[in-house]
Length: 95
Picture 1 (cartoon, rainbow, N blue to C red):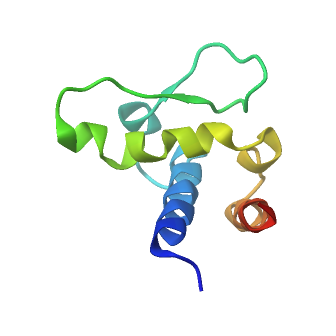
Picture 2 (spheres, rainbow, N blue to C red):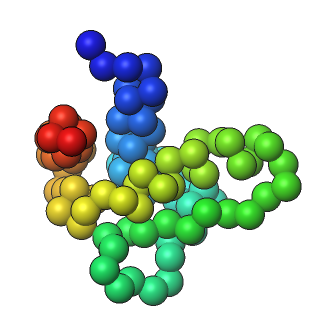
């Protein structure tokens, strides 16, 4: 049985994948800001948005960005949602 924290992280990362790759109707530029420079991280690296309000700091976008940026390029650039889910589960259970 997975912990509640791990299940929430998996769901959030799947939702981020859907938003960034256009599988849902949300506009990604409104929620996320892609990082301009790419050196050795994944090519969909995101920047945290500064805010003084708690609802933005602890909200969906900023809550998962560190975990998203730590994923490898192979996982983030998956061709579909089921492939992303599989690669993510392999990555999380191998640790």
